[in-house]
Length: 293
View 1 (cartoon, rainbow, N blue to C red):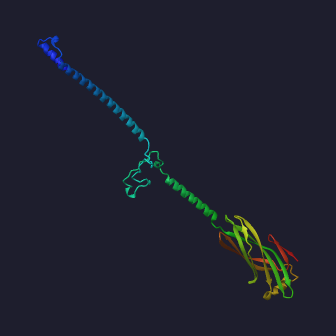
View 2: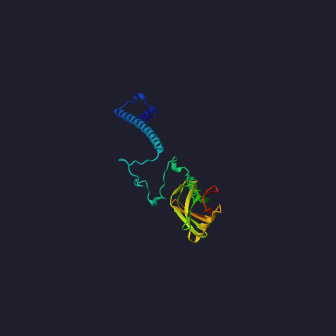
View 3: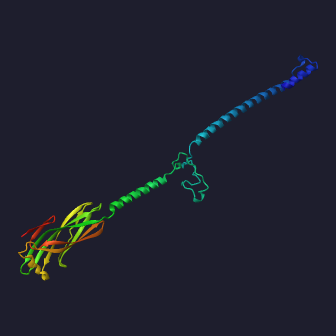
């Protein structure tokens, strides 16, 4: 409206009108006031628009910052009062079998499951340990031989029955039993017999249990009572013949040793020939025979 008034004044000047002759009428004043009020209102609206736009940009910036801050934290589901259960697994932590190829798992980069697995290393170490333990078990528990060696006749006690022409001979023998195992064994019984001229003249059996510790050797003595009589009564004359100083006879010694370990029984047999003096009591020390009349 101001531009209109200015144009009107200019128009009047061109027509030869004097500016002083222009007078404001009541209608003109009202129109000018209305124009000024509209202009002020337009300025206020522009200012409000700029203010609201700045506030919007500030709010948008704050919201983006919040989104960036939230994105730094992994997603965590809280099954509290104000939370909603994840529809994928229904709060069980497991997904349906048919959706294995449809779902994508989001795992943080620092998760331990993303590190290279050492399954091959662990399997190799486990197999090596198992093989080592198996080898040690086989080495220590594998049954080894039990050596039984006949040392010889330790002593022989002789007695006679003049009326029945019988020779009684108690022969004490010595055995060395060696345990080559890495565990203890038990000698449960010893069975022995003596033969003379293919005839059994005496036998015995000992059931005393003897324990032998690992890698150890034990010496065991046993006595076999023998009798020379009946069809061999002629030996009475030989054994009592005074013209002979040493009355040696050859007898065959048979011995069987039974050992047990881990519930398993094992038998070792020995068979040997020995000279025995039937003319007097004798004691053998390290292979030498001493005769006592």
